[in-house]
Length: 395
Ligand SMILES: NC(=O)c1ccc[n+]([C@@H]2O[C@H](COP(=O)([O-])OP(=O)(O)OC[C@H]3O[C@@H](n4cnc5c(N)ncnc54)[C@H](O)[C@@H]3O)[C@@H](O)[C@H]2O)c1
Ligand SMILES: [Zn+2]
Picture 1 (cartoon, rainbow, N blue to C red):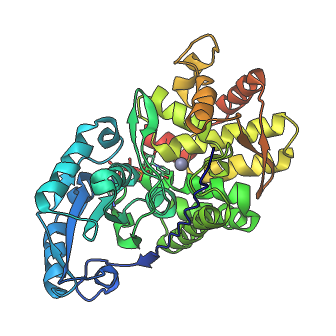
Picture 2 (picture 1 turned 180 degrees about the vertical axis):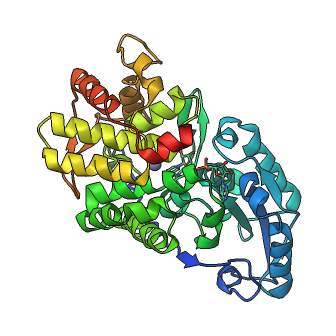
């Protein structure tokens, strides 16, 4: 029987800008993105309420920006506030509300959805943008460290379902990403710190020099120094972008997900802690756990393991998660930490493929793990003292 083998070459290209004061009328970045066909482009804006709370003048600033660039863009409707954090990914109604707003404002594939917020809001709006009209243009304005250096610059979106993270979502590159460092000043301590975990993650598997940089600047980062944070965000974003472009599997068709080092436990812990833990906080624990396991399994030298834990603690992460103790029994079904391994494999399909560490800056993939050794790793971490910054916060 005849067979037609169809090849569909697809090429994506998008800029990731690093700027300050994005909505100042004389900042050309946003207006420069609009590709007018007939008249100014329509823009529909969705904003994280956590951002609005700290930047209450944002609606006026956006209107003033549009007024200053009338040939480039016009606001299609009043700005839409949505709750910040994981809640917006746990309630599917939000996606429908964005779809409805796209419908009512007459947003088409040549118009733009502008999403301003943390990773959770960007994930939800990204999914709505990718599915309205089978894909309208999305401009992301990430406002947390984590979103600026990791989640906001990549090609994935999604919401949670059936108690599983990111169960419903798509791969959809954005039209552009605009990182404005001014937003970072209003983050609380936890959200300032949380994103640093993703930078440590990518440094550990790809770039020993970047790990040295973070290790050296950890006290300054913990004190909220902006200059090292800007450098951290740019390097971390560049490493993520390079992996997407050059890693050979931008849409994760294979079984390997190196950028998810430390994430099998992190995703499960977020759920087991009822989202008390931020994604980045859970990732920090996941990095500590998988580094400890790598050391116990004889893959990673103890001196490197010590440096990794010390760097995480110097930034201020807690490497002991009290909720975990009740969840180490493999016989518990959904409630076991180790169910996270199965869910991790199931999310991607194929063979279980976990990234562990052979060296700082050098990951190694394994396809089988020893759960008893993981229990031992959890116990080792539980013995560590809380860092002084956390002890102070808990007091
Ligand atoms: N798509 C991806 O590739 C990808 C990758 C990594 C993580 N993620 C997802 O990202 C989410 C985590 O994102 P996050 O760490 O940015 O946290 P978040 O989106 O949960 O936001 C944390 C809190 O910060 C507030 N906030 C946001 N910006 C602020 C600002 N400038 N000032 C003050 N408060 C502000 C929010 O309202 C929220 O309360 C998770 O859902 C995770 O699964 C996605
Ligand atoms: Zn992550």
